[in-house]
Image (cartoon, rainbow, N blue to C red; front, side, top):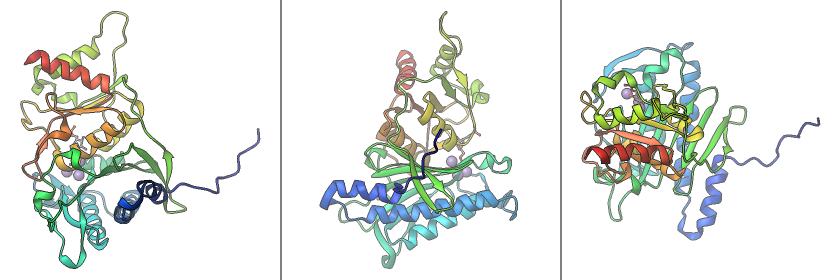
Length: 337
Ligand code: AHG
Ligand code: MN
Ligand code: MN
Ligand code: MN
């Protein structure tokens, strides 16, 4: 068998986004490309720190709690600082919202641009010390015409985002991105320091065989959730039950769901009445990617991307994934109402 020579025409993330901008013609200014360059830098920087964490004393707690009452890990704080610094320096942002910062950051006039970035700097903190996959999640809004960039520019439904994505730090760093025209996945080539297009035009299978819930919360689940889970665990004769996979890092659980299909859920329940996952920087970006890949994202009764946020750290229940699987959940909620 003859080996193929290496490609001499790599499609990097920047090249790919530029190709899309060329396609859009004069409407595109290149600003989004520059903002995405800054985001790529943060992902490379965070990936390096994640990889070295145990060697350079980056595991464990930072000693503070965030606005959600969670203990911050050293990597949560470091990743947040990396993102705030790079996004401000890009000159392309006006408002930043981070899981780790109580208030939104309003960028000063000297550095102000037209985009708002909402982000979860390090998702899956509880998995850091065990070396399990973690990630960064981000969503991008453009400020409203005439606005100088205020909190109102990010208190808008997810369907108004201009781009969303995540980077998963695993055996390699994978950046998955949508600028509203499908979903593409890029893998960091560490020797080049570039994200290379490896997963063009990701589409979720219309039905999967995997469910991903923290079933340890079963005693708190509402009736539609319990009934839905029973329907996939005890299917009618002749059908196989679904397999369970739950990593506990939303980035990793959603990444698998996008590639293999199936359903990921973190519903509201009797304990977390408003849900656990944060609307702006967890649910919206992941719902945006899921819909762009041909799947669905719902609270059970409402499309996630249609929710009007009223505060930057608000939470929501969510089910996302293959469209037929999510449609089944919706049916159980309709039956209940
Ligand atoms: P974060 O680490 O950014 O606070 O997010 C944690 C989230 C999310 O990654 C995951 O899906 C979920 O919490 C897991 O929650 P449980 O541990 O309750 O299953
Ligand atoms: Mn957290
Ligand atoms: Mn998170
Ligand atoms: Mn986080």
